[in-house]
Length: 266
Image (cartoon, rainbow, N blue to C red; front, top):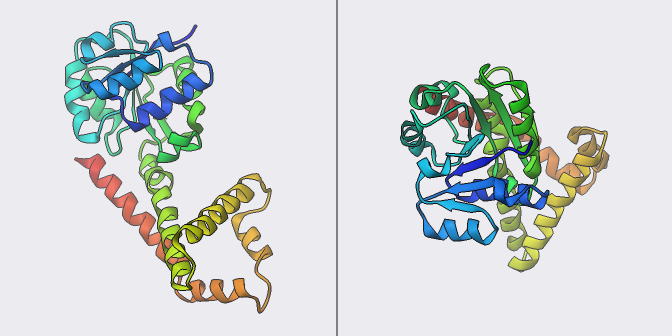
């Protein structure tokens, strides 16, 4: 049976998920979007979805409620839902908000926490998931099926692992953008025009990621394959090694993980 879905919040992540569902053939009449913004409402209705400006009306027929608001809005949303829930499962994509907090605020323990990333907007996201024991296996499977419309999913047995997921895949796209930004700056310093520099760097990043995704070899092995002794790649990688590039990246990820842990503790 097709699940009735309600998205609370109609922003980018919600749009990525329900857009992916529609592309995969999910019935539009099974999706409701709740958002006070008429602009977000018009986006939803243009795609054949039901739109409500208030949450109470939006959840009446829902089987699964996806909370797609900013972390600082989750408590207010859950408090509003408290007492109106009747066996529905809550799926939260808010960083740093635990399932225990959501259960306390909403009054239900049927909670799944999802840590997505922005590439979900182009259907190549990576999502870490954790479920409270109160969520039955069939609902877990249904949620997994929904989210695979916008990328890959991995389930974790310990919710604390989602802090590491946040640091690696949640914040990770920004690290790659930072590297791309630096390479574009380098290319421009060599006299290459901005548009050409962008094209060189972005296509190279896309090509490298595609090769890594389709190869049986590790990224380290792929790097070694293109690093000829005494060549240009070795000159660059030797400098990065001397600067302890791996330690720097590890420290950056650790800082993101620590921040996620701090947010979860609030």
